[in-house]
Amino acid sequence: MREVIAAIQQATSPDFPIVVRLSADELVPGGLTVPDTAAIARALEDTGVAAVDVSSSNYASFDQGYLIPPMAQPDGVVLPYAKAIKEATSLPVMGVGKIRTPELAARTLAAGGVDFIALGRTLLADPDWPR
Image 1 (cartoon, one colour):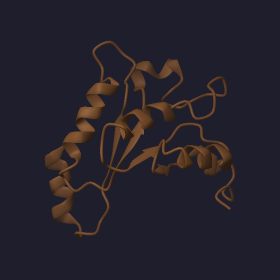
Image 2 (spheres, one colour):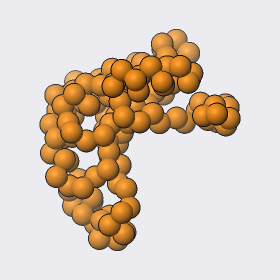
Image 3 (cartoon, one colour):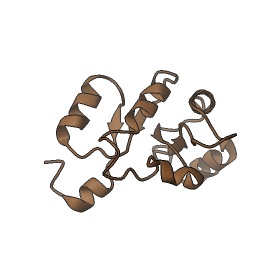
Image 4 (cartoon, helix red, strand yellow):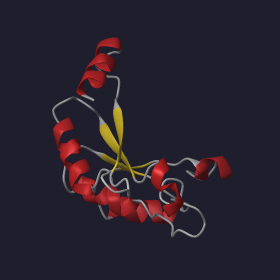
């Protein structure tokens, strides 16, 4: 990962922000866990990355509903993972995962659970959501 970050830094300008997406818990036997990912985030602190974007799961654990949270999952289901990584690193942390209301985003930011909110399907459904 350090080599990839260094290559991106060499190919871009010094002010180009690099954000690394990490799965906090892959939810599979032998996969990454929160302590593993916290250690990775801490190891990235001296690389110059701008932030870490914290997700969870992987395609092997897709059926658990964290990679792409279905309606059966509560809103903000991945945010506790982002908070755990935020508590372990000095890097800014981005939270994702079924953040469907501005109120949930604002509460999470105000509580210090994350530094940024990332939206995907929310903006596809309502591009005016940030307003």
